[in-house]
Amino acid sequence: MCAFKIQKCQVVWAKDASSENDRQSIMKELREMSVEIKEAVEFTKKFSETRMNEAKFWLNTNTAINYTLSIYYDVHAEAWGMLLEEIDAKNGSPKVVGEIACMDPLTFSFIGSENILKTEALSGL
Image 1 (tube, rainbow, N blue to C red):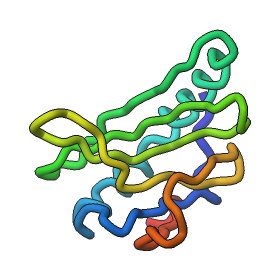
Image 2: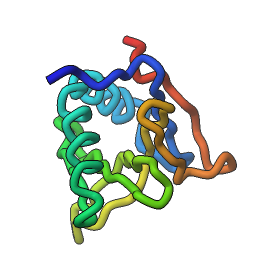
Image 3: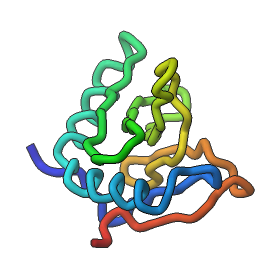
């Protein structure tokens, strides 16, 4: 399986996103997940015609807060949602702290420009 092409992707962080240390831990983990992201992109599109689905990955960030990457395909928008979520330790509910933005595959934006903390190239080390 070929890897997900992350060269033109970036991570967009919400203003109320986690600490800089947590964000860098998330970035490190994402850079190591190109094969898994590619498989999730293919899986979610393939089965989206028959059933709404989502691929969710727990990120191994070694931080006090648990984070996940959720990927799903929206058939109407013909684009993917790739959300970085902080998981509440008490009730398990997710809170969006960032998103992967790219043109290939096309993703759509959840975080409005007024709520953006910063963007970081996913390919940069």
